[in-house]
Image (cartoon, rainbow, N blue to C red):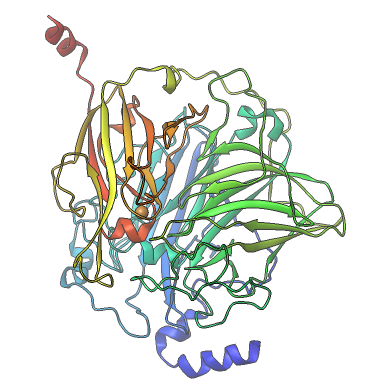
Length: 573
Ligand SMILES: [Cu+2]
């Protein structure tokens, strides 16, 4: 098996970019042990690091992307405390490799160091930048702006410098590039990493003292796109391939996935899904911090012992500890499966299997709708219990000081100043040709649906800092979308008409697809929090299926500063 793979590499890999591929962004073999990313920890309140964004084409034409730190570690964990200063020096070492040929570059992409990275807004396949998903930091250049900030190959290292807010909830956040039109390619290739705000055990006693493990699940183009399904799979209807060349949802839970998955870069390729390996001590409790860094794949995670789903003690979603709003702060929310749209995170306590027990981390199928991609059932990793399992890289503090109570009122208890209605929709360019291209929209109800234009200076929404708004977001299309907004978390009040009033916050939420029959479109009702002064500025909200975002499913919001107290007095007279 290995010999034939290498033979293919030799035959197809005579070009210089392919030789480079062997050394740039190297990846483990399928079935490998799941290694944790290296930890880069803040010291004396500062985390300073170099990150180089690199890429290289592989034999099958797919392009790998990764970040490497000064020591050559791939996509390290950035570990910070609330209040820390983060300084990152981002070097763009991306090259113009394409799928077997050179990607034609837009003329402006060659401008290189001539362009000001803060203002150029160049969005090309070799441009890059960083978004710090989930952090409430200012949307300005050198912090968390993705609308104009763009670093080109050949530019001097670009400095990111921001303060982690003192009140940032402790948990799992992440960093990834956000170049409009090219985000999908860079994420599919592997450009993503974890950012951990330390102190989750201060919010959740149950996590105190536990070994912790960061698991990053990414998707990538199929390694074996032409393989027939494994013999163990039930027969399913003939595969459909959508306009993007991905396997469409066949509704069975089986069949060819739209994308392969990897876990900490260990690929788990279709059709046999050879699982990666996680070693734990028998019966050991660990906190797993799982990030869905996929470009388009939904996850529905479960841990199975002898095929039976195990309780997972959910501690946090999207970086925010559960039970923010009640006296159950120390309780753990037990689930047997956890849904994660692209971009979302879950942190949960797992109890290891007994020695010799058959244990698996799997993702169960997600019905993405008739227009969605196929996300079938598949294995991710086998969990092997062994007394000599290696220690995890990190362990949570065993006697933490509890977090101080929140300084602001619970979001669910604040009255919104207004309700806005937005909706996801899609349009075939030629309504008579189902194979024609699709435009993707995220529209404020009443406006004309338009693909997002990053160069426009007119925001789609204007809000005011210090306020709270309710947004009702409908899905008028036949596939799932994942709503995400930069700079803030929101409260999910209502999901498809069902009142939830969750007691935690999210920054990414699934919006169910329209079935084509119901009188009303499915919707989510969110309470958006613009109280933090760090939300002042212009930033984006979008679908986190990056294929959709790249093709226009995005909008911009300007949050204006709260009026100064004197203006307040004047206007109230
Ligand atoms: Cu979408």
